[in-house]
Image 1 (cartoon, rainbow, N blue to C red):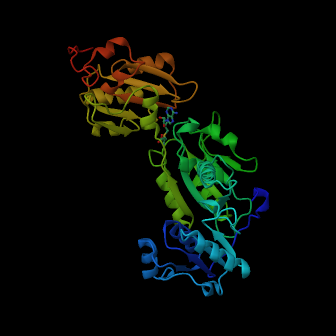
Image 2: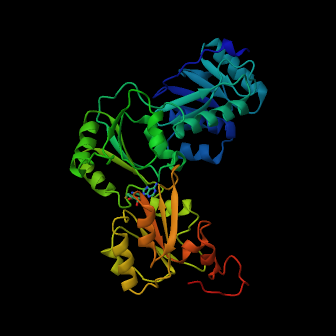
Image 3: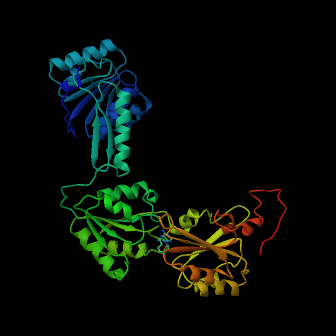
Length: 420
Ligand code: SAH
């Protein structure tokens, strides 16, 4: 049978009687598919898989534990035969043909009146693929298309809006590189009607949006003040109530110093469905962009993420507890003094990573005692992540004398020399 001789269509089997002849794994798979579509399934087979027996016991389908007879076809809309015995399958197919009932014959693909495609469901899209009678090829293609849909590489966005209300997704976009958003975040972005964007985050992805997707900028840009938080909350709710799928694309993770909690709460209070998609936070990833792990065996077992110098008195002041400062450039001198005041040695390494993962990334490394002057000298500016602690020593950007410190996990037998 040539591929052009098939006529793809979608059957709506909800509540309609259908027949599966056979009780093995193939019959089971097909019965499941038919049940998923809501069909009223009868299985005829002397022996059935445990799963099919379970379905029968729980009333999902009805299993007749006996051989097939022609009268089984009475009143059915569709039949699948997969007995494993080609004579029986041929008989079922011939009976179905005589009664003009569509039949899929598992043992004779060429003669089969109907074919079962490889199927995947992503969101409310169902794809079905027939590939020249080669089921593995069909499955491979199905998997590839499903992946492309799931990752947002294919245009999953609706063009007809349903009557019901829209929704909001707070999507953590990661630190800025378009590869560091989650698969789910990317997919939701591909489905969005409206994107409410920050200054930080994967801005390149905005260029890939369809031309009719509305982008509302709420982040601070040079010369413009950011949209106040309450106003952002209102925009999210208003757009969703108009029936739009709204993506609030945020830098890093929505729940790390990103006011995601307030946005989610406001949506819920106003009856708008909201989903929060975690992101790669800059607190961990931006240090990593400079080769700095926030924990490292032998150097630091834990880390704190804080914004300013107020919280610093609560943070363990030890070189083996990493302190990560977000939004910390303006207060850097005060923060360094506060940590020194709590007892952190002045020779504790400090790294500043500006524009992590972006083309203009810059790394400045110094010590608690020197960093404020260094930052001033080179004109460090936001966005920047400041990392304080011994972990900074492992950065490839660290000056050579920092690297003479004890990092036992890398060269366990090396003599211990302290740096200053
Ligand atoms: N929710 C975000 C943080 C928002 S606060 C997250 O989880 O990452 C904004 C701060 O994040 C900036 O002031 C800066 O300290 C940091 N930041 C975000 N992206 C950055 C980047 N690409 N490079 C350096 N710092 C960044």
